[in-house]
Length: 346
Image 1 (tube, helix red, strand yellow):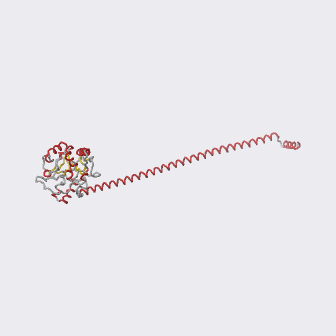
Image 2 (cartoon, helix red, strand yellow):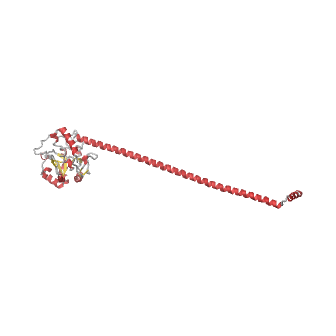
Image 3 (cartoon, helix red, strand yellow):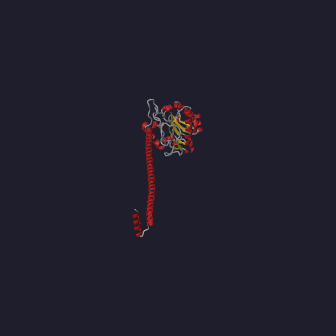
């Protein structure tokens, strides 16, 4: 063995290498290799951590994006649903409005039809409709008195609430008060028609009268107020065609000669007579209450019982005319007609 080592050493010496240097070189190579391996391991470790972080970040970003997309989709669906609900609500509202307008038109049409064909009677003789603006043909027509003046004299509108409109005094056919309102009282029909209006001062007093009547256990219903000249023309012509001019003139005014056009008149009735415009009203509790109390609120029963020779019209216990509390009280207490109070003809 010593011989072999000696030979190796000798060989190294002959090659010009120092055995100690060779060993140092070998150790250096080993250290370098180990260092490279460590550096590679560290690099691999750092790279792995970066990739993991990157992947984690990418995953989180993907999840965030997914959540945002889901939220956006949910919001979109909510908006679409809200839009659909709004559209459905608008369509429903439009349908309800159309149905309401149709109902109103039908009621208005029915009301006009009822007015045009005058009063329908039940078997008990009471009015079936509350919207007939004039009574039926009188069973026993009375002849007009000679003093009924049918000349056409213009009504004096400057008299205000005391204006006289009758067979002698007329209004322009297109006259319409500027202060018409719908009184806050119970009506015999639904909806608002031309005949639902009345001049504001008279409407205010009628509201008080209806309220006090109710407090006294008396139920009243408003039937027909303002009526235009054109509407009166239609009604009057219909009555003439149905009953003849002589009979029609006892209960229906010629166009321009109707007190209804003043806006100071309202026909009122009660459920006890089917809300009809009938002389029977005068014999009911409601009719008697009207006759006894109307003046307190500025109204008179314009065509009272037994006044035909002094007014030209048959008895109408339903036809109340506003003249103001003072004049109404004096007219009632004196048993007068409006013509007599104002000292004018009829």
